[in-house]
Image (cartoon, rainbow, N blue to C red; front, top):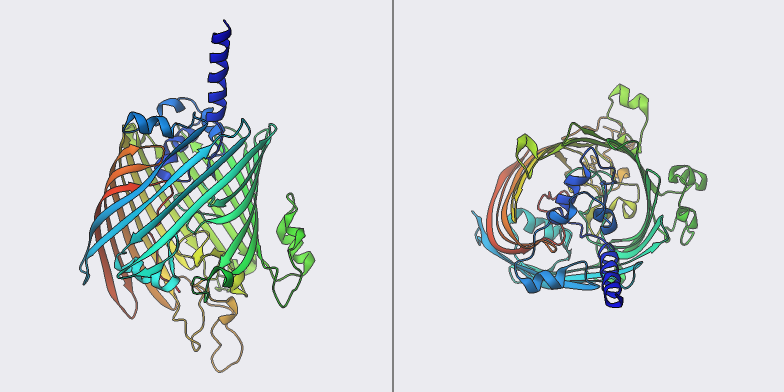
Length: 531
């Protein structure tokens, strides 16, 4: 009897430990859980990622979502029910980008991840990986201009390619029934779409404190983060310009089918010579709206306000939308006069699971529209960016994108395709022409002058000016999961990209590669050099 009780207690502890911590922020890993959350009989806050494992444990049928690993040993050491679980991170991809002078490309990387369920309330996680990589032409140009591998850290030149390194970690404490306190270095995502206009994981990881409060049908997230402006620093961290961000997101499940969200963010510095103040404690208040505080302080900070609304239609479809506002005057919107201060973005999309009666098939259609000058600021150190990368959509501002995605999962097979058509403006970025609001790293005060005047032009800023570019990109991937918990797969992938721009020759990329790939974090192949 005593031995039986001890064994039962051990099982209970194992189950408690297995429900703690954060799931990796990776579409490869968390997509099956998202599909369950989108069911009309499930009330979950699926727009806030990374997910808590304790939330996933309550989902119906969750035990059957992920298949075992490729070896019994790997399956044992990576199981989240263990108090300490870990696994390797591997990348060994080789291929060719056809039409380039040096077509051979490679991506070689190695690292590891580990999580420790220190107690029923404490969980610690850490992952790290380094890479040697050569990029296809469109990414190579962007990496040279920004000095960053998209989402994966500072890119150090090495021969024909680059080396880069990324690490992420967190310590999560569950305080009672309602609160989670998470201190870490990583990324966060807010939204139901393939993209997010509020906060995405496009940029490199950053230090943050996340306070998550869940009560009744509401989840409220406070996110405080330290960001870096690395321009002109040559990769020297001591020369990075620091800035702070404070964000709130309130998610309300009005019913199991309807969810509404409110988002706000502020970006500020403690070393602004025009507004010296040190660290501004006003923005640490967890329950206020930042825009009234900003006005009350008379500060030059960059404040954003966003809204989300999601509806589950039928048995397997979700309709979702996001609106993001920086500045907004309704009379200028009605007039359609292209006032530079009307900074807005809109996302509309739909996603269907088990679509067309095919189990495991996900289909998505999405439109993203962002006006010029959105996410930028008078002082570009306070733009909505980190590590030379946008914090929302990878194209920054001044674009319209139509996106279609399909993915089929069967056992350990994952076959997916993402197609994107984007129309965007390109700034000429010269002193005589000024900024037309397409480059979030240019200040909004760098607008062109009116003819024969010293005044800045305030009106007439529309999509596709002063130069129009059309970017068509298709990403195909077929893989077989070796280790689902870390997203390790044998993979064949193909990128086709075409860019046509006014006054510039067109450019095409056809990049084929195969090998072993770890998808512990999302990759970001959709990029455009706009600065």
